[in-house]
Image 1 (cartoon, rainbow, N blue to C red):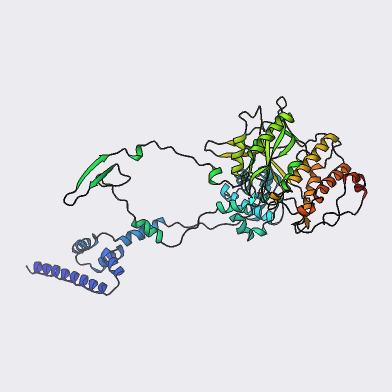
Image 2 (spheres, rainbow, N blue to C red; image 1 turned 90 degrees about the vertical axis):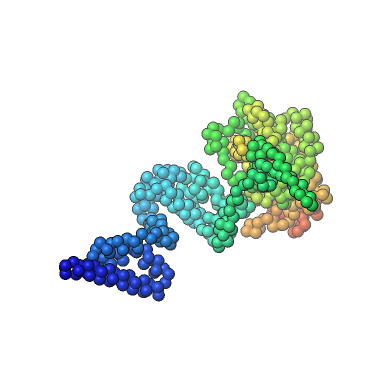
Length: 569
């Protein structure tokens, strides 16, 4: 009996001890922070082990009491902390390129060019295509900063200092990030200057702060009620208000979701009309086949288009191309250029006078017995890449079947040419095809530069056409658009605009073959054109007017013999 009483007393004493310890723990935790109380109430594994080690008398009672406490669910903060620990990933440290890897990389560029997968396998050492591309972009920009060309195998897929081979825009974010500013980018072959395109391709800046997130959280989708009035609901109600009673009538209408809506597609010529298509490709690169026809042009014939593009300083001009097409040999001959009178002129657009356009078309077909084979216009302020509007206009005037009647476009860079030393204008011939989404893809045409022989009669007609062109642009209505030939065109070479025009004319008349004009005939012909402008020097020279008088055509033989003559100072 005494042993039983001792057991009961010992069990009661152990229970009292447990309750006292639990009360002491709770009193201590009340003085601590809220975070500590939550940790105690959650009863972590470490606290549970500590309590079991301290109490050795009656384990069954301890386990029951502990389980009653530990059954409380974990708090939200504890759940979030566990999820964060699971989601945290250790970032891998970037490893640099060793000398051996750099040697293999440059060796691979000479072998594989822009084939990144083969280049990665050649370098090895667990280098993948993504690592090779990022390293290549830095290496290409390094070559550009050193004024060096790309490797020959890389040039086969494009001369641009970019991963895709397209020309690098000096206003792009990657160029500015590497060189500091657009002015520091060297203007080599493979680099373009298009600030408008760079602004449009910029990524939108992210707004700092949580204001947008709070607004998004505050907006909750409301459930639609069929009987409530809403403009977008399938039901609407008419409320007839009166002083005493209100009556409502519901009328069903056809839902807007079930209506057949016509989706209108917006092409690039509407959304971005003045964007330059620097992504122009050759026929072989885009279609895999050669261009459908060969092009042969006379340099003296395109001389009209070159002079025409220099007569206006900052607005565009346009004209038509006349020639013939031989279907047997698939050869297109450009024989003559016809300047068209402008209805409106701007820096980025030009529109032709429809009456004059029709008259010239009739002249090409009826009087000269030729075909209308294309058109030309100038880009005086920017490079001669076709814009989205140019592609759209060109496609609208094309013939249905190019195998029977081809139609080409020509863009001339008059004052925006990159050849500052020689001053020659750059010609770019192009064609367009239509995509399924109402966009137009420009394709660059390769030219077979052959010379068509010129006789005296053709030269007289050519000179007469140049004279009529100069007289037209000497009229008063062109005063605000006309070029000042005394203005300095380039500060480095100190060429004025008149000298630049004469050098461009001389370049396009120079030939290497025996067929055509010799050097003496070219000099005489250029001097005759120069005299046409000097006869109206008050119109064409607003600054730095020439002091010498023009030489007449009767003394054309003597003017070749004169030395140390510099008319355009």
